[in-house]
Amino acid sequence: MQTQRQTLDLTTRRIPVRHSPGLPQDFEAWFHEYRGPVYRYVRFRVATREVAEDVTSEVFMKALRSVHRYDPDIASPKTWLLRIARNAVTDHLRALRRRGSLHVSLDRVPDLVADAPSQEERMVRQERIQRLLNATRTLRQADQELLSLRYGSGLDNSEIAEHLGISNNAVAVRLHRALRRLKSAVDGPDNDATSDYDG
Amino acid sequence: MTDSTDFRPNDLPPELAELDGEFSSVRYEERPSFAPELEAELTREWSALQGRRYWPVRRP
Image (cartoon, rainbow over all chains, first blue to last red; front, side):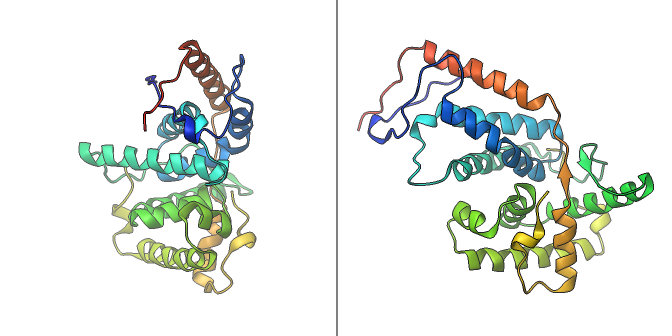
């Protein structure tokens, strides 16, 4: 990953950067606590495990380089990291669009876990979930973002509200609408032949 | 995986509640070595950042 020199604004420096052999103490704790939600958020929005790993790595690398600028008065560490993740995903998807790499794919997803008592039921369940996930990628970005925060990262309404800067009630309303649009996408006549990308 | 009972909107109609339940069961398996690999990479990067001895200061 490319290293770049960051600009430090001493007037907004909130966290003293401790020079030690390991990671800064706060950052290390954040990594262990929030890597999972960040990874799952990213994984929910991109098509493969490999891309999710690349984007997640980029998120934490960017966060590390700018940890001195983190302001706890503005956002929780989780929200801060997820905002960096959102920007990284947006950049990734934009790059894919520029390359014309967004395309249809209903390939099986090997890292998708479907809990079911039998192998056959697991297969059926996995296909159904994959169909749902493919359908999410036909939705507008705002809906994808919302669904990824909820079902990928597992945020509750108040956490989503903090992340998006809207009220809890607005989150509930938007989730409702996003699920309804998703339902329409899943039930749409051409669902089997649309959606997803190779990003 | 999410616990949908935590934040399912109370007024979801049955067909959307079903969708919510299905989505809440979505789980991706993370590659076991990913986290330690990334942590090692971050530690190396942090060490390199410290090795530069100074941070450029943004002028007002």
